[in-house]
Amino acid sequence: MQTRIEVGILGATGMVGQHFIKFLQGHPWFDLKWLGASDRSAGKKYKDAMTWHLAGGTPATVADLTVEDCKPGNAPRLLFSAMDASVATEIERAFAEAGHVVVSNSKNHRMERDVPLLVPEINPDHLKLVQRRWNGRIVTNPNCATVALTMGLAPLKPFGITKVISTTMQAISGAGYPGVASMDIVGNVIPFIGGEEEKMERETQKILGEFRGDHIEPLPARVSAHCNRVPVVDGHTVTVSVEFRALPSEADLRRAFDTFTGVPQQRQLPSAPPRPVIYLEQANRPQPRKDAERDRGMTASVGRLRACPVLDYKFVALCHNAVRGAAGAAVLNAELMHSEGMLDR
Image: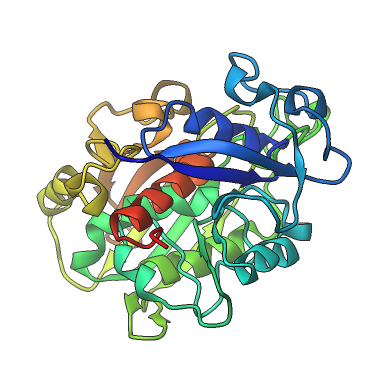
């Protein structure tokens, strides 16, 4: 019987931290034993330090854990970070310098030359990036909208992607809690999310890029993103138009979607969905309310593949932003690392 690995969460009281707690319940490999948060929460029992915002109530496994300050000391070696970007850089680096493995959802280290930006089905070889500046290491997952875009594009990469135009319809849960004011978002669309478009464009090129020994050569494609906040609770939808170097048929692209798989499926990692990308035949799918929760929120749904009169083809992609785009993504990254022997001391 495999010995479970003790893990902790940095930023455990926030929305993403709560999604980490929920996703890790009953995990066969990882045993959640430590919760870290700001000094306002440190010293309190978890149930007294936060307000639980997710369905089902605070899990009994963590309710009576004492929240610790986010400083190296008695934390487990493996930590999941849900830290706010305003404080993540210093805190994550402090833990990495102290020998911890930090699997982060924060944006702060994603684009650094020696930090892997992972979607395990797409670029598991990027784990070969070696950080020599810390005793531990930091591994990141992408922006929640970038995940939807890259999961849709990855099956099509063999045809030579040259141009991408994407427009997002992003759920309000992506803004955290309390997020967007109700008077701003109800019955409305907000056509701006600060820094989001730049993140999507750069992260997509890195994730779909090639490992070159000590760096990632970005995907040589032009990527344009337009990001919008819409009155949806969970699930980021992305409409995508793409141009290829080759001349694939629609049947070629459908076959690519239908057969796409990766290392997590081959190794049967605990959080890996049986099929990472599912093509939905219905003309009006995917939809957040009907499809975001598929396979615990870890499956990307695509649909509406058709010819594009400006580029070559266009389609729709959808991912659960708080699961495949945040907590679940980081947990799957850690599972991949464990399967590679990278969590062994």
